Amino acid sequence: MHAIAIHGGAGTLSSAQLTPESDRAYRAALEAAVRAGFEVLDKGGSSRDAVTVAVQVLEDDPLFNAGRGSVLSANGLHELDASIMDGRDLAAGAVTGVRNVRNPVLLARLVMERSAHVMLAGEGAEEFALRQGLEPVANSHFTTERRQRELELLLEGKKAAGREALMGTVGAVALDSHGNVAAATSTGGMTGKKWGRIGDSPIIGAGTYAANDCCAVSATGHGEFFIRAIVAHEIAALMRYKELDVVQAADEVVMQQLVRMGGSGGVIAVGRDGRIAMPFNSEGMLRAAMDSRGLFVTGLLRD
Amino acid sequence: MHAIAIHGGAGTLSSAQLTPESDRAYRAALEAAVRAGFEVLDKGGSSRDAVTVAVQVLEDDPLFNAGRGSVLSANGLHELDASIMDGRDLAAGAVTGVRNVRNPVLLARLVMERSAHVMLAGEGAEEFALRQGLEPVANSHFTTERRQRELELLLEGKKAAGREALMGTVGAVALDSHGNVAAATSTGGMTGKKWGRIGDSPIIGAGTYAANDCCAVSATGHGEFFIRAIVAHEIAALMRYKELDVVQAADEVVMQQLVRMGGSGGVIAVGRDGRIAMPFNSEGMLRAAMDSRGLFVTGLLRD
Image 1 (tube, chains in turn blue, purple):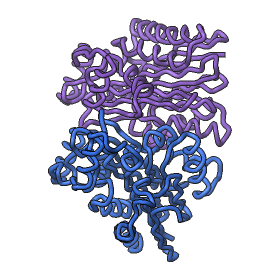
Image 2: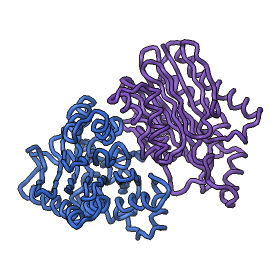
Image 3: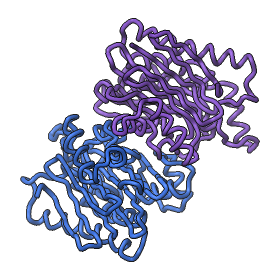
Image 4: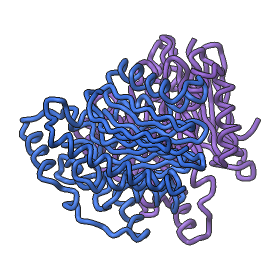
């Protein structure tokens, strides 16, 4: 049994905005990413590799708020966050506030595999990236016309920092045929971000968590609420100690706890048994899943 | 019933290093901090205020690796982290990598109370501090001769980045007479810190967690392990879902889970019932506790 699920953010679009063309474009992009990850699993590869590849595809696609296509901070720069965790040994890596790393998820993975640390920030993280041989890119590599327009509108006060600005993220969770789960998350943060704000995406336990005894989780939503609810680890704890299954645990956190707090968004999660949960309490969550029993789904809004 | 516990770091000293003079100095400093926090509680004040005051006293004391007396990063600068959480409403605030904020715990609290965010980093966090009227201090404000010598020895290769370098932190947890718990943690990080490394102290869920339905926790130890084990929130989850009491839950995480992973350090925790737990798996943990039933203890090494 192997399985993978991915997300491309929650609250990114509403039914009013979704044209048949953008519907097709999002589904095609999600399918490309989920297939890339699934192929790794299908060849007997690790969940660690599968989530890395899937997130890398999403980072490279300008449709999503991660890597290329990321939103712009108030200072006109892209400041990117990412994290990864391997459920086999609870190894983890994360980076925050990087500006010149093409694929933040790859840097998070290098932090996990080649440093004594879990989390590196800003210029220090860039320095580590150089040492590891990652070729730097200009910050403008990440820029798209759409994101520039969004920042301009926000700074002119013509657009509120609404859900779209807050909840763009990408992520992946996987179970491989060796029984190991892994999770990864990557984001450009929020449009017009100030003060070096860090959301839940690079926070192990909040945006990303994986442990072989229960599940792997990647979250997307209003990051402040997701940090305060320690969303990813809370789902794991409900499985471990309250003996909920992955669907019940993810539902309890996303549809009950977060709703009570006022935190909108969703998660993707895969249990150690390969079951997939993709609950969200927002209008939409870009998502896709595949497993070795023939499951293949993509979704944008509520079914 | 009200109660408070504080810590001044784990692994900061070994029995071989502890002279009668330093024993007295540490105990006096711990007593001053725990009494300052307890006084707030005794007057009917909030746990939020009590942990803020106690941590501020520890930050201002050059004996501890937080605020004044913080260790130096490899770049010769102090880069400070802090976090705070209020169990009443799960409000939280954190800062990482600040260089010119006298009391990082106060800035974390301002992030919690006066921003829409939970976590701010680096220069952005400094900018927010200025806006909030915190008078900046020169980075040299934090410097002591002892920490300069430690960095020099480390850079000359004459001293390994051992436990002392890794595990200096201060923190406080409290239950107030209104039934609200809170936790706060502050650190100068690790001597010779590179690459913008972030430890567990500013990570909500790892170094700091508080929720009225179970407990408040502040951790100190080898931060990378504490992040991967989501220590503070794991203790809360064991109380919530496995119905352990605060002593059992803190023991399970510190003496079992962390030991299995190889992560040394400890935590202080207070349950909603006012019971205090202060387990550590390292040689020592600077600690003190007081409650309204007359408890008063200070401790440095194992009893």
